[in-house]
Every structure is written in structure tokens, then in C-alpha cells.
Amino acid sequence: MNLNEIKQLIDIVNSSDLQETIIEEGNFKIILRRSSSSATAQAVPVQPALTVTPVQIQSPAATPQPVISEPVSQLVDSRSPIVGTFYQSSSPDSPPFVAVNDIIKKGDVLCIIEAMKLMNEIEAEVSGTIVEILVENGQAVEYDQPLFRIKP
Image: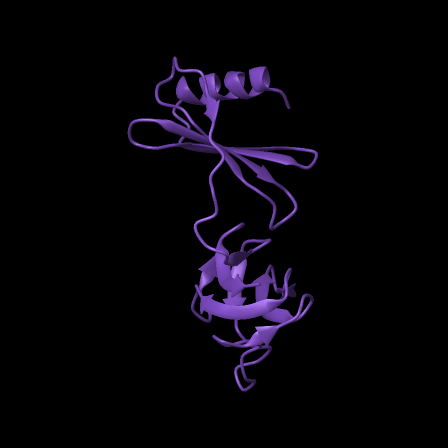
């Protein structure tokens, strides 16, 4: 997707009543989200843990200028790949897969997300230490919602 196509998408969203739209093309994903006074566009790689390049639009007539954000910290967010219900363990009687300060390896199971009666094991994408668990057991989660913060 080139810059002109992105500009056209921004113009379409600005001239419509849409509050948010997601467009995926190959390994490229764009999220256009309208806030109270401006629209925000984000170019998000489909593969997790890659750089996100947000583009801020000040007004509908403004030309988007890419803004590459510097990482605020060295933490990596493990995000939900699907919409569903978050579970910390495989059953109510089982201990949680991970807890804060646990050391994990890439590929370790972090949690389960139930979607349409299917239990999906979510694995760690990086090795490191669990710093924070961002959702509660049994909580509904959205696509791309941060679940865990990991210090690699």
C-alpha cells in the first residue's frame, strides 16, 4: 500500500461517520481511528513484536507525516491474537500458567483464550520475565489487546 492509497483511505474516513476501520493487505495492516478532533492512522505489521509506525493527522486537509516513536521502555507486550475469553489456567483447579516475576522461554504457554468453544493456547513470543498481567481471569479480550508485559 502506498502513501496515496493511505491518504485516500484517510479522506474516506474523514468524510464518513466511521469511528474506526481496519484494513489488511498482505503483511500490512492499517487502523484508522477517529478521536474527538482528529483522525489517527497506524501502520501495524501483522507479525507481532515488530515496530509500529503511527501517522498523526491534524485536520482532514493536512498531509500525513510519519512519526516514528521511540520505545518508552524495554518491555514487550504479549497481545491477544483473537477475540475471546482470557483464562490463566487450563481448568479452575489448575495453577496459572504464569505469574508476575516468572521467567519464561519463547514458546511457553502464557494463557488460554476461549473463542467459539475452542481453547486456544497463547504462547510467549519472546523469552524473559513476566512483569505485569494486564487482564483478569475470565475477562473478555479483544483482538490485539495487550495481555502481558514481558521484560526480555
